[in-house]
Image 1 (cartoon, rainbow, N blue to C red):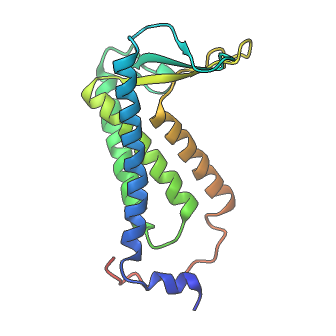
Image 2 (cartoon, rainbow, N blue to C red):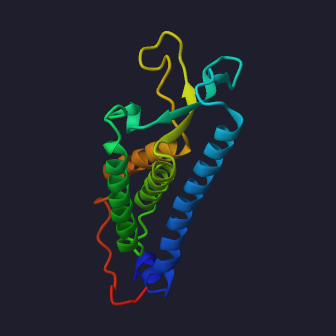
Length: 190
């Protein structure tokens, strides 16, 4: 019996793994909401960006995004708020179920990617429900470089979603489907 098969027989291992990934998602939400709170309190909305470093590559700003990524649908008249609330809720539910279903499989890269995307989606979902928009505050600027002068502002939730998506790509390219299927006794109730 392999170590993987042995570990699957340990009672409660799947629940502990699920709790770990949900804890990561929760941590992303907490850090995201805390940093947005600090920005809302410290920087006036619309104030010019405050350079974060001497090279002016990073700056802090306070912006409101009523749309999706890159303000897509920001001027759609208000219906997009509830569309994105429903979409983010549905996606978050699917990801949580997905994490539950793979809890015993030991798929670390896939699970970490899903947890980061989940945390980011919920972080921005909280903004949409409570404020009607998403607070963005990190600005990256590479002078003279198209699309990066400046790059659209983002927040911790957006960064988590991006890192999670990158992990999902890495998993799909290098891990998922590459390991032999483990024979797991799914009758265990965890």
